[in-house]
Amino acid sequence: AGVRQWMEFYNHRRPHKALGGQPPAVVYSLEIEATQPDQQEQIRA
Image (cartoon, rainbow, N blue to C red):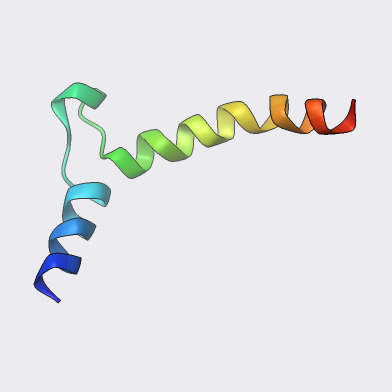
């Protein structure tokens, strides 16, 4: 349980300097949202 809690904190709550103070999960979800419309266009083509 300790490792799982640490991973939750590290990926979802801890601000990362290299990511502009955002947790990795936030940055990753923003990247997914930004790329999904492009991917959907490619699928339709």
